[in-house]
Image (cartoon, rainbow, N blue to C red):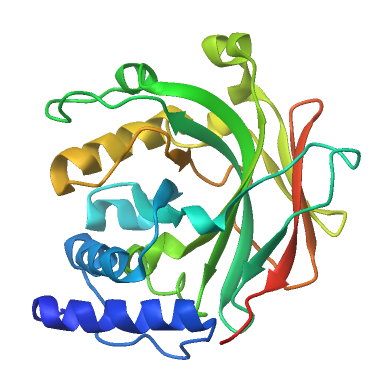
Length: 275
């Protein structure tokens, strides 16, 4: 158990310094957080130290065997504006954006639906449902989350450790918007989604198989805003969860995600420069 805010701040400082330097942390920099409250306290401290505008939030899944222990099936972390890029859908659009990862840390890519917060409620108090949060979403896009951390073992010790370092996020590729009809009818939830790395399929699934779907991820964040004061804001992107799974990548790889019959988004993977 982490004893006190000073210890939480020390862990946060170690992660922030490593992220700014582009360097690795071979070991976790302190006592491992045992609860989600400890983990979010570290994250909140790190957000204050890191600087920069929060452009969105990633939502990840807590493995089923750990849901009862932690009392929830999702986790969250901030996505900073300097890690967000917009990409085209085909080779005619332009160059494939390069997304940096920690070369000696953890790195993965995830095909995700991205929901944008169009407005905020006057208060987050009360009970939230998927239908209720949908009123505050003004756009749905396809995208790729870049999961990367200076700590190579970030996903090996449970969700509290993942939360403590920005939920293991290091960027977001924002692709094409879905039409209003597709969003209104929720047709996209049954679309086949696949992710390839250097042309080889790494995973395939549908969003309908993800807990209670992308809007459930938004509901989870509204509940965090209610319970922990999570700083949600209009215009932020919600990366709603890995549809096809979490797929390790290395610098030099090209990642492409295909959503439905023809919506694609891709990026290259590069290494963060140390310095």
